[in-house]
Every structure is written in structure tokens, then in C-alpha cells.
Image (cartoon, helix red, strand yellow):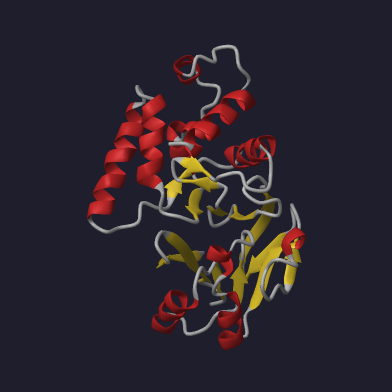
Length: 254
């Protein structure tokens, strides 16, 4: 079993402190900064065995070196990004395993936002850490990759168990929901999620994690073959990739 604790960092980032209950090994996913993560560790496990990085952007690796120095942690990252990840120790490629004690993760290469972006997926623990590729009700901007790569990356995630809990890198649910509903107007499940997110935000609670099954029904970037969405975009005969490209361009200007 895996414990997951959400750590709010910077303005809207989330890092995740994870612990394998059986072995008490502890990791952190995407430590945006040292102080917030170190404070959480000092109040809980008082140790940090591994640092897991989904990609090289500073708001996901900013705490790497100070945490590594204090706790003698090993840093796990994409082999593609080893030269861009501060303190990289363990390099992983698509399909490789990584074990935090008895919690086994599979590395999934999900380029688009960055070329070396990876996700950490545990079928046993029913979790996936998606960094800035899949967000709650959204997906990441395309900085280094292509629309085709981002679409393909989302398709990889789409095929996982619907019960998988998605932990992403930012608190963007409310704004993403506004974009989704501007096009997917008749989606009642989407409206319910938007109201739930608003309620949680008012209570100063995270809107994460999100079940993948919910995302498939409400995240417009997973619904590129939906007839009503295609009609609203005046793209009735377009391919899923063409619809995705249109949506991503619209979101960039939203």
C-alpha cells in the first residue's frame, strides 16, 4: 500500500510525498521547492529515500539538490533528461520498472510538454503521477514536443484502468473547467465536477486527485471524438488529432 500526501508549493504547484507502508521507504514526486517539502518531511517521516522527477522544468526540480544533500536521497528521472535534471542518479526509460519498497511503478514516456517527460504509474497502488502532461480537466502546454506527441501521450494514459487516481503538477482545475464547459456545454458530469472543484477551492482544499474515469467523461482533451464537441467546433469530419490540435490552440488563448 502507498500513502500519498499533497504538498502545496510555490503559487499553484503540487509535490507529493509518498511512502510504501510495508517497507517505510519514502519518496517525493516533483519537489518544486525545498522549504515546503522539507517542512512536510520534518513533520512526518523525517527521511527521504528517493526523489522522483517527471520532467526538467525548475518548478518541478527546484528542491532537488537541497533535499538530496540533507537526506542523501537518490534522484530518479528520465534517461532523456539526465543532463537537465539536477543531481540525477537513476535514469529510466519507457517501460522500465521502479520500486519504492513493495510499491512497483512503471515508467511511461509521455512527451509533448517536454521531450523527456515521464509518468510514474503503479497499477498495484492505483496511482499515476503525470507532472504537466495530464491535468485535472486539462493537459499541458506543448513546449518542446508536437501536437502528435502530446495526443499520443494522452492516449497512453487513457488506456489505463479507469480507477487510477491522477496526481498532476498544478492546481488548474477551476480554470480548465471554464475552458471545457465553454465548448462541451451540455456535459452535466462536467458541470458537477466544476461545482465540486469550486466548493473544494472555497474550503481551501486541493481538487486533486482525480479518478481517470472521471477525466475520460469530463476532460475535453480526452473527448476529441465526441460528436457534439466536434459539431460545436464545426469540425464534424475532422480526425481526433485535428480536434485535439484545435482545442490545444484554443486553450492557449483562453
